[in-house]
Image (cartoon, rainbow, N blue to C red; front, side, top):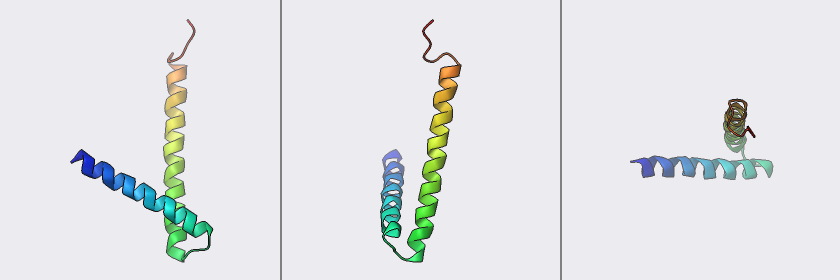
Length: 65
């Protein structure tokens, strides 16, 4: 079951990346919509990862004590 979910997530990510490239080359309107959603999701994931890294550092994750 986990493999099926992971495969679905990977397929959505690859499809979203394809739409970003297609929209940049002047694709149809729906590709621009999917592209905007894909870029927004990537920014959310990136900011969440940044918060986790900074939290680990401030909580003593990589200190020289």
